[in-house]
Amino acid sequence: MTTRIDARFAELKKQDRSAFVTFVMSGDPDPKTSLDIVKALPKAGADIIELGMPFTDPMADGPSIQAAGLRALKAGMTLRKTLEMVRGFRQDDDATPIVLMGYYNPIYIYGVDKFLTDAKAAGVDGLIIVDLPPEEDAELCLPAMKAGLNFIRLATPTTDDKRLPAVLANTSGFVYYVAITGITGAAAADSKSVGEAVKRIKRHTELPVCVGFGIRTPETARAIAERANGAVVGTALVDALSGSLDAEGRATPKTVGAVADLAAALAHGVRGAKQAAE
Image 1 (cartoon, rainbow, N blue to C red):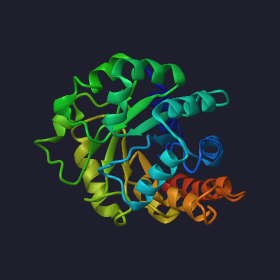
Image 2 (cartoon, rainbow, N blue to C red):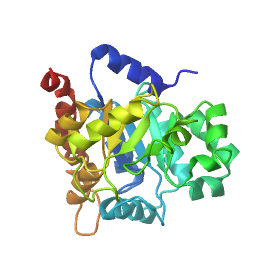
Image 3 (tube, rainbow, N blue to C red):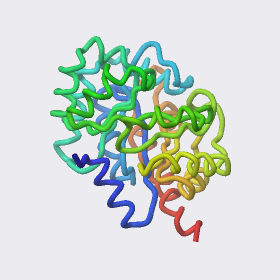
């Protein structure tokens, strides 16, 4: 099984560069604007798009992404509408990988088998489910793999060599390394410690390692991309979106451009990584 994620990393390897991975919340600040933003991201340089599934009780999300999820829910976003958004995106783009990121509860309520069937049909390529550990692989991970979706696991600074094999056992697509101990947006990623962590993970797997949490600027994105196979940016893009909204939290003519412009600057940073490393 070769997914869009596998194909994208193979393509990037030939280009000798790292991936720029973007995260935005599905339905933030409203479904139409959200789809416009997602459509704009590949043009701005995003190689892979993570789409947040809005949920009322997140565990790993900082204040910015929590607020994005609440804006989306207030605007009527649901998991079903998130899949519809992916379907809408696929009408114009059949190449950019889409990864749904979030929590198990909405999927459980939707129904695992139905969700996997609908997600695959919509054009979803992978899942990152923050609150399902390897011990629960039978719940969603193994069925997802059987359905042809990559199941992407998080590794953290506290994931030691004893725990890492369990984390990697059924992981596919790429490994998501969380650069900080804490929630999204809580601190800046340190490229030196990230580099050491990536090397350690690479001793256990041949999968690409992408690094997220704490990357806000083109400079940090470039520094991380020099040491990993990809840099993931979420909170900074969500903050750019939030800063463009009107006093009532509604989209303005600046909203899509605010996110796309920052994404383009970050992409430029990632794309400069190999030159910086040479």
